[in-house]
Length: 333
Image 1 (tube, rainbow, N blue to C red):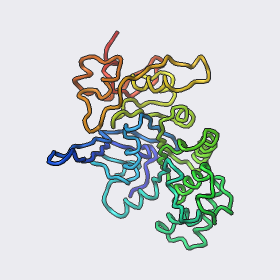
Image 2: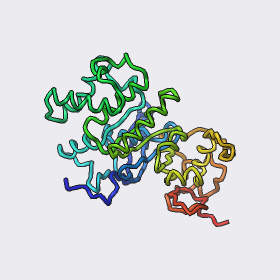
Image 3: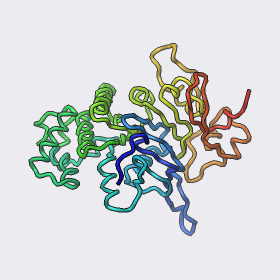
Image 4: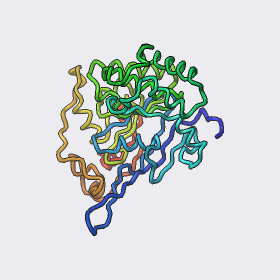
């Protein structure tokens, strides 16, 4: 592996796809679920890219593909310009070290039969040559960084609150000094007051350790707090990508506009007119022809029902860049 190129994004996905074969019933041909259908993005070092969308849009599948819990059907994944999809031990070791994941549910992601110290030492035991004393020192160091007291080392997960368990999960993700952390709904299972504490902890760790986050969430108020850039997904595809400022001030895709209109705003001046989406998210087993969003879109016209829009670059009214897949934006008023 060559030395990282600092001018490149730390992580780049190019047309990543993940398809699953599913049974349609006895004597019927198997169907194909396109959970991810050509996702491309760039993640810059020390930044946070938020991925948002309804349940079933492919966010968690993306997290599994990025961490190689699931292998992609096609596409490319690059770390500083070098492929992470090579099938060799060196690349596999690099993936484990550089990319880690924090799961949604701290109640289910920690082994209840093991003490905290054993849970946190396991990545070091498998991936390093540190002895037991060095492993414990490393564990206590990371526990201190995430706000866990040394005496927690010998306790079991059931003895902690939800927020403390998520801190343990964060500590486990940091044990191998990763550069990229995939956070899959990391605060959605926590109380609102605890959510703020965990988010602030993650932001502090990002500043201290230079971490890059891919932060998956359905809560746009959380995204507004933590993200630098936002990618909006719908039925396995990206429909809009832009900076946080651009997305929250001038959303351009009708789906993004609908999501933001449903987000509570404390300041009356920032409130948006509510956009009600009719119908449900289409099945990825039987996606509609044309734009996947057209059946729920108030702006849809004939072309939307016949063709799939490609993602293109547009300027909003403030001169901010957006990448959007929508035929409506090509119509000149």
